Image 1 (cartoon, protein in one colour):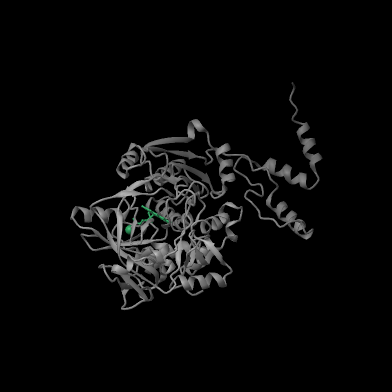
Image 2 (tube, helix red, strand yellow):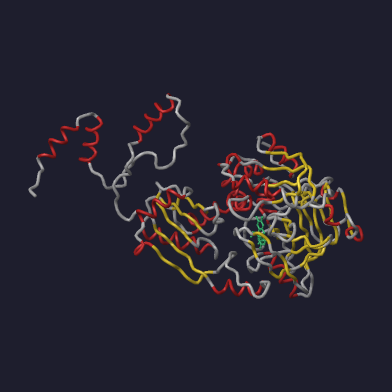
Length: 537
Ligand SMILES: Cc1cc2nc3c(=O)[nH]c(=O)nc-3n(C[C@H](O)[C@H](O)[C@H](O)COP(=O)(O)O)c2cc1C
Ligand SMILES: [Mn+2]
């Protein structure tokens, strides 16, 4: 499959793979777009059946028509959709990530690109129908959100000191034809926030370019947290195996992907902040209004009929959680196995449904020593302040991605008095509860609240001693039975672990022999043997 250069080629690839739904009827972007796609996540549809949605005929609540299709669920609606954007099978995604981290490729600047097919600046931005009036941006959580927000805006800025580029996805609250809010996060570790702070200290506004679309690999790279000072566009080049092509912006000293759908150029003011939100957030609740910077648009450039990519976020599973999970799990696994020298760690599962990845994590280990189990648990919660509020360690026979399997381990292999630890001194992170003073929550008050702290729960649900076998028929009997099942035309099976019995150490040759005799029909022999061991009572 050819790696897509832009959203348009990506849409063609999805279409060919049978992963695209085109909605041609008129759809209201304020009330219908996101609720339609939401059903794919709250309607009992398995991940393998999820599709990308292209709304071709977009109107708004006032009846206005837009020449800007909406593309939702299109970059990471499922792991399969993500793999189309990466141009590789799902199994190869982790190694692509590893390769890109080790071999980033610098972008190149070219003279022209489709993203500048149309250019609007100055007065043009402020007239009726101009500026953001041209863009039919959907409302993510109709009934709660206070405006449409750009949810797939990739904010490109440069460190005011070193000039090193950063790109990250940050929500953009649409407030007027030529200005938006921007939410660089109260977290000091958000790189846009660092740039903004540095510009403010120098008494300057921060030049920014918010672009939407471009090569899918760019979209995947810019949501991953990589070290400060590492240009995400170099990482994207590493994912693509070739440089990302950029064009120079018109009004700011920045450059953006040549094949993006559209770009908002402008400055993020550093002399005031103002209320922004409320907005339904990736933690699954409405995030209250906070004080945030304002982005003043100096120029909009776009392709003809720009496609508005919008990520479905909020309650998980969502496109937002998937786009993070696919790259984040290999990063954490690599950290435990390689950087912490814990080869017994086999897998790390960031539980996605409802809990949004970071809050509930399961580590799977192969025949670990107990001190390695604890070290893996401590290392995981040390990797990131917000990671692993609840962290569980399980053995290799427990599927870390199956909550039933994990509950099974918790119920039998964990002794609460001995096997759990609560660690304090943690940051509260991006989640409720929020302390609201009066009507609104100030972002600095929120920072204080984060400092107020939180804790995490570590649960060691690995075996500490031998257990008897899992009481299901041995594998060969289950496999034979499956053959008969299928020959009889009974409903298709999707085996779930455990589907056969296996030893967990507490079993000996005598039990083995008795079971062998039993299936050979020789169980009277065992009865006879046991009758010789009678004890008086
Ligand atoms: C759909 C979506 C929306 C996001 N919105 C925000 C946001 O508004 N504020 C924020 O701080 N992070 C947001 N993030 C997370 C950042 O993109 C992520 O932390 C990224 O690593 C930041 O990169 P940077 O620190 O290099 O700028 C969002 C992520 C996704 C996928
Ligand atoms: Mn960064």
